[in-house]
Image (cartoon, helix red, strand yellow):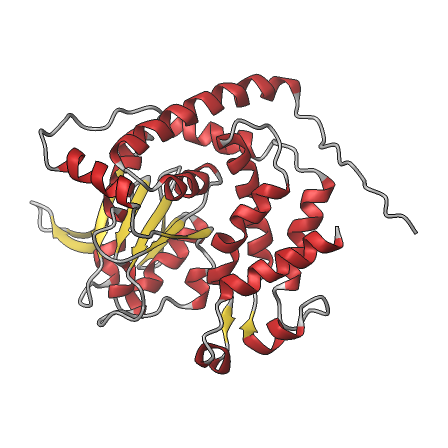
Length: 342
């Protein structure tokens, strides 16, 4: 029987949003170009970090020290016009150092009252530098802030600014003095961005740019209100049925207890991605399409984002780790099966 190819037509974008999306696409190109001027040789990393902001989520940047992770976040804060703060995570950092604390003050008339002093988490873009250097107790202090946009101190709830994003940097776990992030916190990150060494040509450009005469600071291209509107527009972008089906099939096939998972994945993976992974892909494919100048995502966006979205939401069993099996290879195999079945 001859196989029939179905050509998918994505739903139409509301006409009023088309012009805004096209204008936003131009702003994003300008923002990406400005960031690329300061962060050389990390184009894919910049694209993924911007996609996380556009999707309203948080990103985890993983890489060895000295690869520009901190500089990237600081540059993004300036270019996107966000009020940014930086926390250097260390083993002795306490939750109150992040969230803030209540202090007892005495007025001139002798009366006493508690006053809440805001911690550095009260900002629009938080750089959690070397987050896995801190103890699990301190890491967990960010859980409520990342998921709900608020923190609770002494029975009182305090709302965080809008927008609120956490871009955390992490050193590889094989380095001494690091603590693995708990699964619940890893799932709060929309994606994981691996920051690798630059190419030889890029490293040459870095040498010339950073050891010569210092230029001025990065230019602001957007602001907080513009980012909020961009996040609203992203959610109005259409996602075709074929792309949505691909997202669902991919996420479900990476769960070891799902019938569609391969025997190799069932034997290697101890737990797989939950519904947040599919939600993250639905948002991020739209953001990536817009960064590429398109008004609707396609299958190539799902393929490009599969590893960053799924890898930190899966865990290998002990035997698979001992055999040197990589999660990235399992995700690629799941994608290949979907392509073969299409």
